[in-house]
Amino acid sequence: MEERKPVRRPGGRSARVRAAVHQAVTELVGERGYGEFTVGDVAARAGVADTSVYRRWGTLEALLADVVLTRLNARSPMPDTGSLAGDLHAYAAQVVREITGPEGLAVLRLAFALSNKGEQGLRARDEFLAERTRFLQAMLDRAAERGERPPDVMDVLDHIMAPMYIRVLFGEDPLTPDYIAGLVDRLLGQP
Image (cartoon, rainbow, N blue to C red; front, side):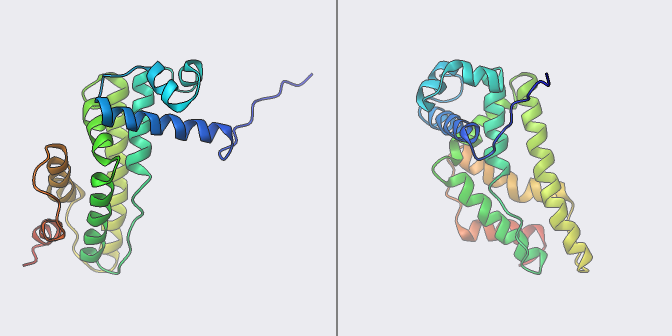
C-alpha cells in the first residue's frame, strides 16, 4: 500500500494558522516586548494548541525569525517609475509606510532583538539583508540598463534605509516626506 503524504494547502487551515500565529507574535511584541512571552502565550493568543506551534516552527526563535522575514520581505513591491530617483523615492515612501504602520515598530524591534540571538536570529538577519539587497540590486540594475549611473546597493542601505530604521527604532523625529526625499536626493547628488 502506497503511503500518502500530507498535502499543504496554502489557502487552507495551515495558512490561517500561520497568519493567526504571526499576528499573535506581532501583537505580543508590541505589548510586552521581545523575550516577554512564551510559545504558550502565542498559541493562546492565536487560538491554536502549543503543539501546533512547536510542530511547525520547533522553537520560539524560529517562529520569531519567520515572522520577521515574512513581514519585512512581503510588503514592498518594487516600484518602476522610469527613473532611479523616482524608484528610490517611491520605495523609501513604501518602507516608511511599513515601518511606521501599526505593526512596523514591533516587527523592527523584533528583527533587531533577533539579530543578536543565536543561529536562528543570525539566519533571519542574513536572509532579510540578502532579500533586501537582491531587491534593491534589481532596481539599481534596471537603472543601469536605462543608462543611469546608480549608486552601490550598500550606499542605498547606508544612506536611505538605515537612517529611517534608526529614527523609528529610537523614536527620533518623524519620517516626514521632506526628510525621506532629502535622503534620496543626497545619495543621488541632487540639490
